[in-house]
Length: 315
Image (cartoon, rainbow, N blue to C red):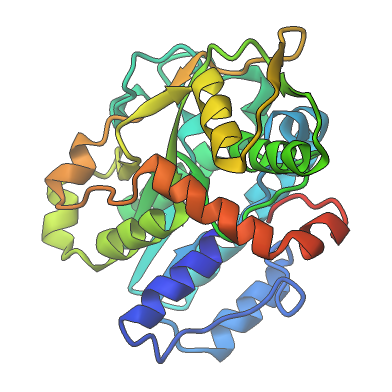
């Protein structure tokens, strides 16, 4: 999802020299393959968006996969980028790097000030390691390796598999199916009380290009060697109950929403402080309802492929 959005955004500016490889063409978990790719190709900038991602269930069920694959991808790409003399790299992390009970909205300096959320701890540890790798390569080798910490993303090409998706695409699929089939109620995990922030993936891609293209003096005037990352979000949150009602309305669902409080809620609230990003000259443009409607229309247009697809992990 993020990679496709980045390609769309870069192509909008011309993007004639984009180097693109599918997962089948280049397995980023294989060190020798990654090093060969960088050795054979002249690369100026790297957007490190590749990751194994998923919702609460996927993270809870497969912690070993999440920590292993993400550590391998990050380590291989960052090391190879350094060896190849890449001038600039942007590593994409996640808002789950912050403590479970961090003060809201979460500032960049909240990192490692308390325990992580248990359900996605393995993924969060991997992402924190990626940030610290970028900072360490900057401190030791002078690399201009930057990091962006996006909030919950959604949009075209999202993962709509109910076993591994995040909350928003899962709700879109559930409510669309219920509305189409005339189902009278839709179950939603948890109490509905947790609050989450969402950002359309096209906004995320625009923010990434903005951060990548800032002159070093501008970027590093706000970031630092030991706090090299910038939160990327909308600066607004919504409760899961409110989100479910909004998605239901967009999908034309007229039945009841049943919250299953026996299922985990995850972190009580996740809202990013985006003052650092605003200081660098960028703000989100796509409103949540407009973005969800756009994503719903995309999902409906690709419904046959979505329902026929095998379960996936989201890399």
